[in-house]
Length: 602
Image (cartoon, rainbow, N blue to C red; front, side, top):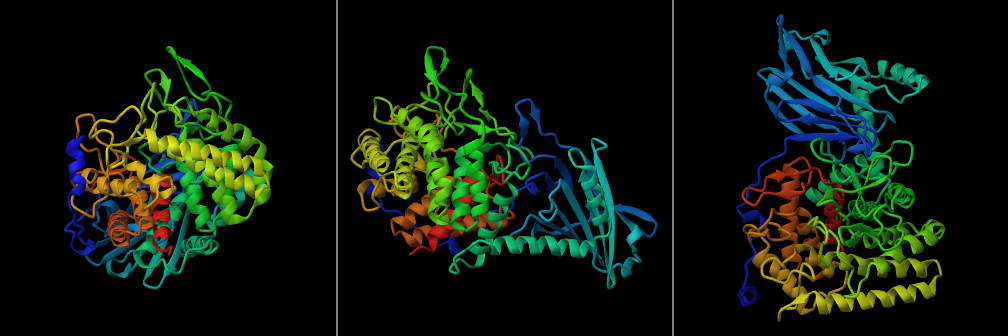
């Protein structure tokens, strides 16, 4: 313990972003596009779309995983009687059109330049993928529209393909619309076929861009956000919009945790809460309300006082929102380890925070009043019941996905404090004054337990959990939310200790690199965690360490823009490469939005 305490007396230096010497490279291998109904993904390695999934959730139901139905795609050019795959051409540019789900890929070889566009359209409320190819000037090689043949081959015969063409000066546009047929009404299919058959590719692209412009303009972004941060914020919002399920039925409104074609992409309460916060603070209330409505009406409550071995593991009382994640149809599910589910009690507090933020920003008191009985009985009550004899929220899996018996994780209790204070605000707003007083009192008691039982040493640093107090394993970057949520005053020694611990112990490289969350069992730092970094940025702004926060946020913005606006689950310690799912939505895109908005609050 003495070893780590001595470091807090050391001075640490901060280097400006322009000279930090870090040159992160693009490390993504795919770009996804979704419209809440289906997902398509472009693979940078084979230079073709290689994924079409008919749902954005990884599992429509417990037994029905969402398949990838795309066998192959591409575009063949006939040049001087020779067929050439466009994938053989060098790529000169690949990214999203700013603030949209439209993927643009530019190819160029000698005198031939081709701009291609791939997306799942928001302008069409069906499961459709669009492939467009713009030949800038076909005269150099005497190319005609008939010489450019887009291709799409599915693993099933359940697709309708419609070709499109449009002349454009010396060049021309060739397009292919692919419709997923199952579930679509025959009348709707016929109308869609007619419209797409008559569509002009260039106009179709422009219509999609206008849709995104209109959607962004329907929200509100402070005028003080500009430049690369504005561009990053817009693209982050686009990812949240793409990740929200639009399918009719009980799954509508859920927001999946990532848009990766390679990893599980279920909706989780924790991730959804941060997405709802970002939507509320940018004025997209319809999407926020749809997400909250999903959480309030989906099927949860199956992990109630379940008996595993000799220990009860789960909620003591009935609950309404998932302690883990959801299937696409809105049924609760969880990962199983050591014959027990991985569960998170931070779901309650984070939901209440998101719900209160929605009411605060939208003034939709009727929504709060209508759902108040269920919120009180099945969200607030089980959260209070989860406080055990320690005064903290009882053991769960926490951020580390710890199997039973779990730990009394600090973050779980921090989120409950935020949830109880949010519940008090919500209660006051609908004239439930007695309840508000009760929740404020319970929040104060929980705060006292956190500050007396989860602090370590003379630095009064917050520890990872009640069970782990040994150096360096007790260190936990997620405790920065103690500052963001006003459990710890930004002027206290504990806040200063949290800030210094990030720099001294939890930074995997030179400043202004971000932070890891924790140490592995072999006393090695885990990978850099963008969520912890972005929440730390917000905390540093709260502590009025603006220069330092700006530098880290600029670093994160630089990483993000280098990788098509996406944020991953982790960045490797050695070279800042993306690993595990990306783009991450709630704890990635939404966390970035919250950090950027915090940077302009005065």
